[in-house]
Image (tube, rainbow, N blue to C red; front, side, top):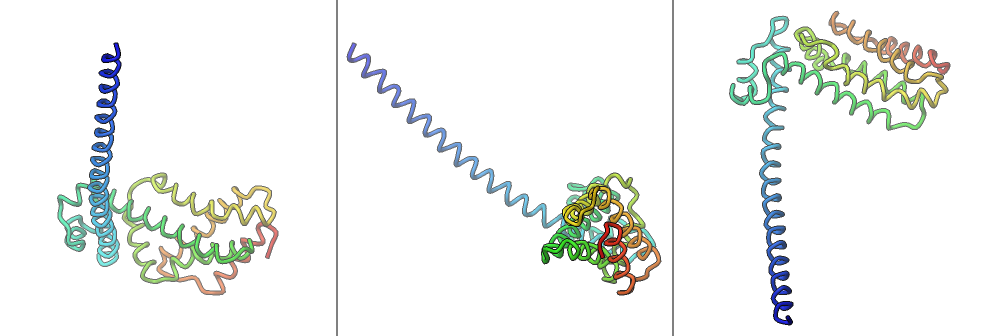
Length: 224
């Protein structure tokens, strides 16, 4: 019986050692896979960014004509195989470029608004930051050219616009707005309406016009 107990104990030790070996091997495998996937992801990000940057340049250069996939691929120094690995076609590429632009604007506005704790200054920073997208002439030309050829429905990139408006909710709430989410939506729609007007006309809002829009938005929530 004692021998049997010793044998069972040894068998348990062996199983434990095997389990630990498998665990170590599995961890090593997972680490190797993670490294490989990480490298692939880095390559993918660089390839997609190159295509998105290229479509902006090509769209601006060819305006008002629509850009061609071949021109974008050549501009990016890429290939058709790489392009179709990530995008089903030109429309999807252009929508992705627009969505990336919206997310970059969100990051920019968040940074600008974070420079002050005063909710009035935060609202002003938001308005000025949005309209800066058209006062920057290079960005405005690219945006106008891109918007002219994005054929996908507005709902496909509405989430980005909603995120922009959400940035306004905390300062509007701090200013005493009874319905800060609604006020944020109205301000967003008004300011973006002005932005689209200038993009379509190829014009730039003056400093006085921007100041007026800031004051108008603050008056709308009872502050100036």
